[in-house]
Amino acid sequence: MLKHKKLIIIMVFMAIVALFNTTAKAEDTRAANMFILSSSGTASINAEPDTVTFSLAVQTENKLLSQAMQENNDKATKVVSEIKKALGKDDSIKTTGFNVSPIYVYDTGQRKSILSGYRVTNMVNIRTKKIADAGKIIDKAISCGANRAENLDFIVENKDKYANDLLKQAAEKARQKAFATAQALGVNIIGIKTVSTSFSDEIISPYARGVAFSAMEMKSDSAGAPPIEAGEIKLNAVISVDFLIENVDKNKK
Image (cartoon, rainbow, N blue to C red; front, side):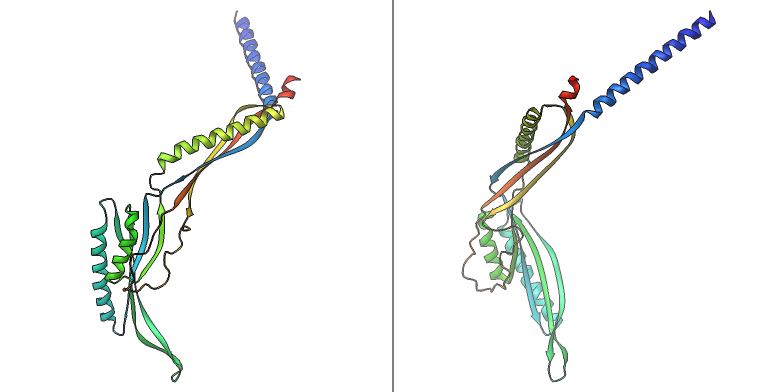
């Protein structure tokens, strides 16, 4: 009886091993016939920006450091105060830079650089949803002592309301291209190996992102608010997919 049980156990074990080997071979055969079909899809939309950011700087120079600091502080305080009055509850202003540097001039008689004074710079960044009022804010800041305006940037803050739909469109285009290609090649799509997504935005008019609104020194007697047109922002979604495919002809053999 004991020998009989052992024989049954050995037979069951051998059957399991044989089944495993058969399954493994089948999987190996299938894997050998599996390939990758890469496909991608894109979708885009032109959206109106809902936010604008820009930088303003107060720069002062004086022979005495204390005077340069005091003058800069007075002007910067007034600029910030006036800007805050013009901003909405969801807007912001913050200091992004403060710099004190000596000013040297070259003395040809002494053949060396001589300290002639000091330059103090205080820079703030403004973020506002009042795009139509951006020009007025800049003009007001200049009248209060700001003498540099730059880094104008338009933004679509709520990208999520566009992103999901655009990604779905891009994914569907990638799928359609892949299945059309698979059908033409006589192969079957059996799964997905990898998927990558990307979402980006770009200014299409009238300014390029990151370009200074005005790189030149701006005088306090500026004639009126500078015209600022937001233009549009192009939102782009891209889906790249590696599909798993099988060679139909080999499976039929």
